[in-house]
Length: 125
Image (cartoon, rainbow, N blue to C red; front, side, top):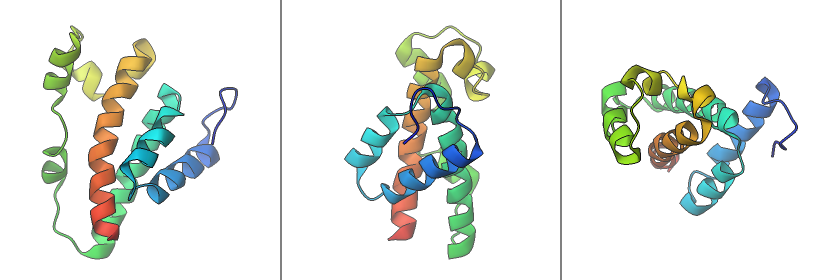
């Protein structure tokens, strides 16, 4: 796993992402692995998992649209309300907050990644 002093470069993110995919069948292990990551690494891992999910959907020939996937995630406006955030909605959606409020942003991304984890687990059987 990436240590605090390592840059989350492409090779490290791929390694983190692959480890998360390996943990998809075990929600507790997946969560434990996510907790080890710094906010920027969480963002990069989320991008990796999203791309992995898209490839898996295509490989399996599953008819699952982006809207159907995101419907399983907490809406950004609901998340912002729950945490008392007053930032613009597009800041949160565009992950700008990973730079301005990294803890909040990475918590939101962890929730998103849980939904992705669940789908990957189902598709991998």
